Length: 157
Image (tube, rainbow, N blue to C red):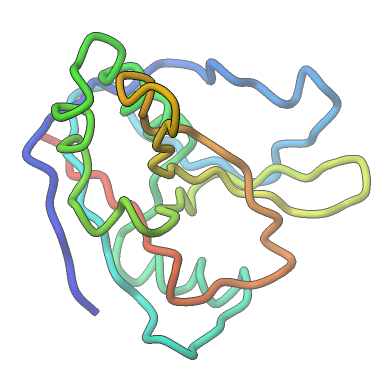
């Protein structure tokens, strides 16, 4: 398992900005993390060809104290609002641009009883480079996880 570090610091948002429970989703797991300043580490947890289940990912996250929440991702997104594209790229380590960095501390269930987790991904714009940015998306955790997923780990400052 390898680690990469971000040199930026972030302030944890007090509530979800994108609250899917207002759309009928059920929040089944959320870490109780105190507000405050944090930095992000990114853990590379799987080798090419390896696949694990949601429970396997949660176990690895717990063993490595890497239970970031959706609020951590939203805090990263908030930080990028006033940055240039080059500065946005540096919010997370370079290896994150080619993968999905997942927040294992928040699990939501949709109306079909499928578990979802939020992740952050780099989304380049083909038309306007200035529109390239990090975005939060939701992954159906029922499918499992492969080497394209990395774990986000918050370090309290």
